[in-house]
Figure (cartoon, one colour):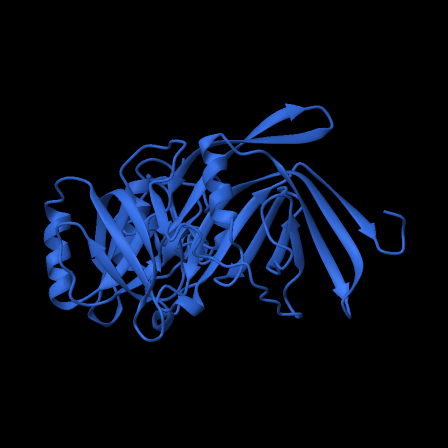
Length: 361
């Protein structure tokens, strides 16, 4: 019989500071055994085998969020944000978690946040912000995947600030009161307002110390999963219809009835999970947020997508995806300046086909 967990745990906390934990210990124990030096060495060797589990263990002991690789974050909720070292934080207990896959740049993400009933005198650092996940339900049809949308949940809003603003926010978190509305203001370079993002029915969740004297605050959506968004942009279509084409990374994408003829996002296709991720900036992508909104409301229709590869402006291949609908949309970077805004949308598809330009279409 293995040594009781409380004994191993006590040893880890009091005697060892490594950042790993083995899934098994190559030794046998009996109830009442005295821990010999060899036993301790066996435990230490086991601890050195794995570089992930002790991080999760320590985070659960201390009450902080677990610090895991992105591959550990999956399902209806994705990645909550990043810790002070830039490592991904996965959600383990609350829905509506952000999907951001890289740590934000503080210079790009200092923005004005207005919170009902609370005055903030300085800009805040947006760690993880505005977005929504839509549940994907699989229907089991022989020999073919079939997906339909379900309920949705907004992402957490995670910010950092310091000084008097941090003191005021701590008081709010210690005595939260009613749900709050918030306005996130995106500005042009001349400091004029470009657009606003309104978030409704937000509530406090937790705060913790961060780098450089800042405190990290996490707000979550107070409502349960539903079929309507509790955030909106004003103007409603803050994103544009102009081309933003980096030939090294972008591809022409056509979404029937949604995008213009000048949509050139970065494209990642996960054929195993039947998912397409499109990353784009503020000058393009108009209509995608509305598409996600009507999908969640149950009034949208499945679309088709074509990803087109060109060489010297001549089409060389086309890949078509059928029965597509969005399951995630978010702004993940650039809150500090309108021209730096970046967004992504994750889209489900049922099937795909590849057509080459030298073959009849």
